[in-house]
Length: 185
Image (cartoon, rainbow, N blue to C red; front, top):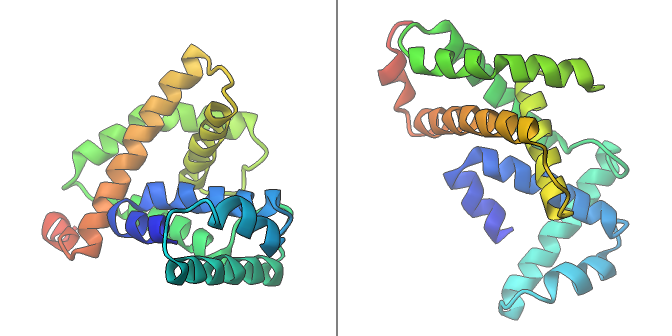
């Protein structure tokens, strides 16, 4: 919860990847609050009041996962909404002639996105979600200490740069600075 709050304020891309990981941690603990308490909450070096807040946060996430039917797979609506916001921003930036660096970055990463879509089973989601799926997949492979091929590493590096740029524009938008940049476009 504390990490999530900080990430949401500072880097929306890292926040989303973190929240996907939290969803998977909840699933790995079978949505069992006692297991989450023992394996996730208790190891934190925080006071009891903070642990209580963290416990409540996990309980609320578990409730949402049950209500939304994402106990086995999928993402919470709050996380899907971020993808929608980022995709809308992405399309707005692509349409604007005032941010050619963004378009250039997108067209540099586009072949990787096309390849991801061709290989994957998620052809009905946005390109932005495909990028996050790729980033998350590689993050999981690294956590499992599995080797990442050279071509995959290159693709992920480009996708990371692209998503970092999108996240930076998201921050500017949140601060009200994007209208200045885009003007009337």
